[in-house]
Picture 1 (cartoon, rainbow, N blue to C red):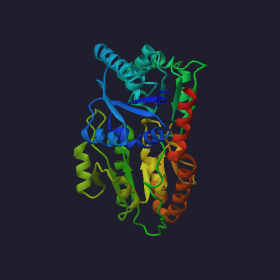
Picture 2: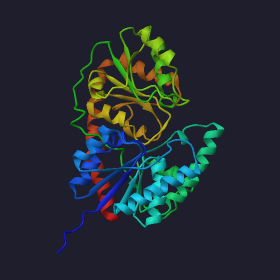
Picture 3: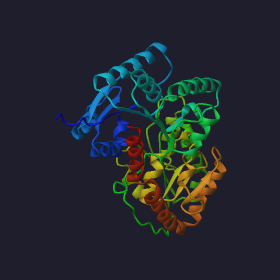
Picture 4: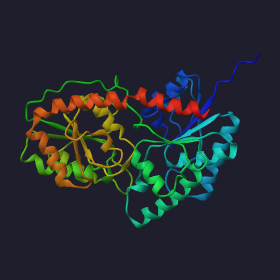
Length: 380
């Protein structure tokens, strides 16, 4: 008798590095459960391809214009994904991020292939209020509605995004939706450390792309306000300066770094080391997050969190138990939140302990991947 064919799954994304940074444990879970995994992205870097190939993953490239709308190029993306599905006899398509979800869902419809889309956050399109952004949002809503209408399942990372999609009519009442708590965190890679802080040398750390929507400017503003009163406090920033129009000023960043108001580290791969040596994690974002991976890393290590009362962020904080929620774009609230820890350093340890417990109970990557695997198996 011929051997039974392993079910094949094609994971689609817009940036190859995200397969390693955010989906590697999920990929390993699929492989461990008998799936043949294909990973699709534009312009694979050699190190990413090699890491995935070593696991037995087949990498395939497809063209993708990551920003803007070009009907001809967008059609080429859909057709290329369609060809990849047919050539590799894909049994299930698993796209994430906006364009792969839209184009992958359309390609899946053309080939009658089951599709499970992962909505990892709504990003720039649903974060800005300019006229251009509102027009783009309307276009995106229409494309989402068309693309998702035939999906077998849609996975969200917070309940607010589901509610918004339903309110805007993107989802119909019969669509199969699920919620998982972000991409999850590998607890052993971000090991817990006790932090019985008693001194007034408290280190606050911000980790994100250096754009306004992530709250980078707000963090620097707060550091400027508080550094004179609390000279021993340290404010550390880790992340790349972005090329987008929302990028913060490199000159201001350099100036504050030279004046020792902040300490700028640039992009770092070993973020866990920096978090371990810091006290409080701060992310005053008003970007439409899924659930920020950076916060999950801080929870696992055992850090109190200061973040915004916004979709994807508020899920990571139990008020006054493991951190402080502030309203978005409110500098005074951010300053008050930071001041609390400066004036109450003994609270850092207990709040950090509660963060780790929350990571173990809710955000453990094994819990997340088991939920996704169940959805996939039910679909097939």
